[in-house]
Structure formats: structure tokens, C-alpha cells
Length: 230
Image 1 (cartoon, rainbow, N blue to C red):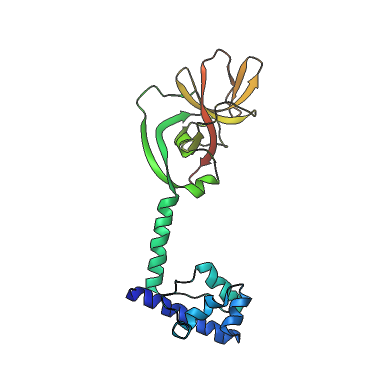
Image 2 (image 1 turned 180 degrees about the horizontal axis):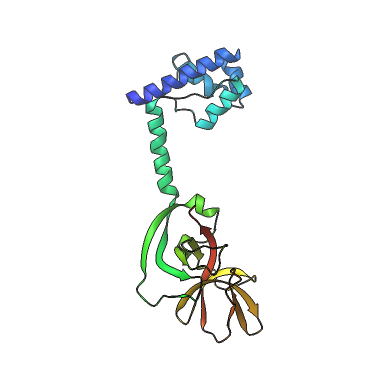
């Protein structure tokens, strides 16, 4: 047992004793009111009398439950305890992270951008849980890129960061945004099915629609998110 462990446990013990005193309850009654086993509290406020030592630190949610039951504020614990929690969060963050490719490729939102040249790819770290709020796709099927042009303004602006899902290549609904290539030009456009292919649509009313009926269009993936700087 380290000195840091002793300090952290002592801080919790003092807070528990204060919570018991201010609530007017016994340790057992406080634990019961918080929906906890009596020993959760008794072993930590009376470690020697109970015959136990080295009890683990209470979890944050347990402390919040006890604070609510006692009608007191949750504890603000000292540096050793916070440092241990910060280290745990750092480990959790690493476990939560996932790599998504950032592709140095400007998808045109006008006439299109030539994508025949060398493309640079740089993996970037993102939170898996945050990403799941946007897409449930396998991270290997996702990539970030940049929009170029104003044919989809104001829905998508020049320079917006775009997340493309390459696992989706067959439009199931009309007028969704897709990353496509046509005659080696990369574009972000809405697609609408026709009898002989697709209409290629832009949100800017000043940009005329196009069409893909000769097999020249290749779908790279569906646009699933747009990030914009303000």
C-alpha cells in the first residue's frame, strides 16, 4: 500500500464521517438510503473496528449516491486521488480512440476536381464513442476529406471537412449526398435515380444539374457528416 493510497482513503473516510454527521443517520442507515450494502460505508469509516483494511476507493457514482442520500455536496478530493483518476481516464481515452484516415483530396462541389494525382493519407485519432454518434460503420470504411467549391452552398461550404462512408455505395434514397468520380473528377453531389442512371444535383440553384447514364460515374461512398469552422 502506497502513501498515496493511504491519503486517498483517509480523504474518503473524513468525507463519509462528515456526511453521516450532517445527515443525522448512522453509517448503516445512510448506506441503505443510498441503495448500498451497509459494509460499503462501515468498512470505510471504521476499518480497524470492522477488521478490514485497504478497502478500494469508492467509485464516483457511489459517492454521488451517498451525497444525495445525506443531503450534502459530493467530495472534492485531493491531488493524489485526482491524479489516479486522471491516469485512469487517460487509459480509457486510449482504449476509446480509433484511427480515421484524413485524405488530402479536395472533392469538387462545382465542376469537379481532378483526383488523378498522388493522394496523401494521414491517419488521425478520434474518440470511438464520439464517432458512433455519427456513424456505425467500421472505422476502416471511413475517411475525412475537404469540400472544394460552392455548388452545394449553403448546405456544404468551401473548405468544410467531410466524413465519407465507403461501405455505402448503392443509393437507397434519392437526394442524399455522395462522393463520386466521373471522368476522373471527384465531386460531392446529391444523386437522384432515373430510368437510365442518375441525376447529379447541386444545392446551389445557380448550378445546373448533370446526369450519369453512360457508366462513367463511380460512387466512392456516402457523405455522413459535415464539420464547419465558425
